[in-house]
Length: 240
Ligand code: FES
Image (cartoon, rainbow, N blue to C red):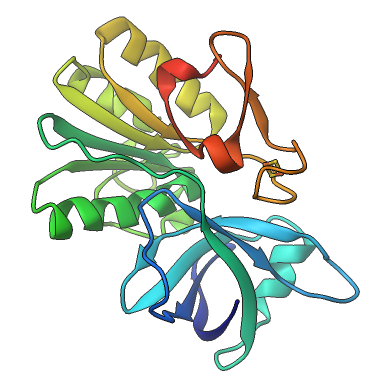
């Protein structure tokens, strides 16, 4: 469906917020994503997966410029249209019996913002958010506790170091970010019996289970498609 752009602005270094009109035709679970068609001709033809950073008055994606497709997207102006397919995939499930801990890294923080809003505003429960970035220039939200690798803002170091001592069986972790960060968290969650739901970032060509471009290996040596079986998985399902 074609949705009108309300705003497309740079919110941090090489990071943009794209707000689209909410057509009031669907609901969105935190963790779900859309396939966005950036251009039809001459390049790029494929849609790109964008997780939902907010949904309500607008449908918001926060995206990092990583190549020609996303660079072209930065040139789109309010009033123009983009073609989106979604909402797709399986999102986070919210468990109100545990302490909820959100841990995000880099652009992986984006889906956790909508999760945080849903937990607080819809479920009316509190949660703690810890977000890590490489440096102050890359920070696009301060709606949580912040760490930077170079110490230019907040805690100096990796976000996993910041939450390490908070993990236990009564704490449910929701995580999204770079693979290395998720691996370290998965290792600690195994060790401390802490449940965790992870949203995986994957290259996707179709987003609807057809191309097999997004498969991940599971802990029982099978394969799952990130686009339809995820992107959110119980961390114990995945082979790290
Ligand atoms: Fe095509 Fe998942 S992106 S099967």
